[in-house]
Length: 217
Image 1 (cartoon, rainbow, N blue to C red):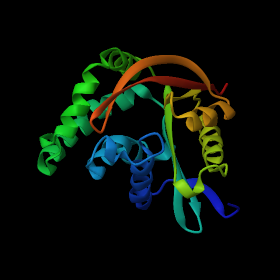
Image 2: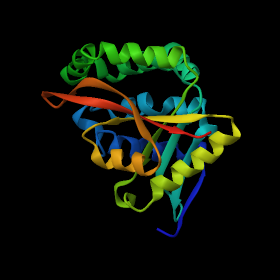
Image 3: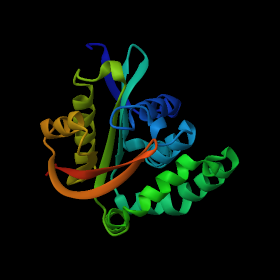
Image 4: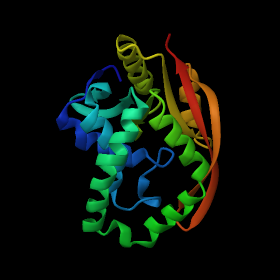
């Protein structure tokens, strides 16, 4: 992987970022078991970072092809406000026109989400009353295990220091052991955990969301 370079995100990278995101959103596997509409799901998961804070996003490029990304947000309060008042309303309209809300799969996800009210309350608190920073990492399948993610984290950490960010957080599914090991090797430590329920296919799955934190200063 000697040809991999890490560089700042460009608008033309968005499709590649969305593809990698949807290919790895379900514990490293494709998102279709949770949400069938990849375009709508990609907007939900990536639009804030690529459209409203692109300066905190970096990509890994191998021979001209984007093979990984790190999405950064340096102000959870801003993230929460943009999501609530801009992106979510836009997604509601888009979801109606694409028929997202007329599927049993979507309402199964919503029903499962109702059980997560404690986690959602905590999310509201950290998003609206905290300026904490967070990140998401996604690596194309053929490039995992080759230190691409580590390079992306190191790049974001260096950039965060120039912006006066004191710590970075990442939320991880506890059964995603590869992701847990990745963040632990990168110097993140578990600071909090929340029991969650997710619908995958026709089944409800119980898991724990782990909040990993890395102190920068």
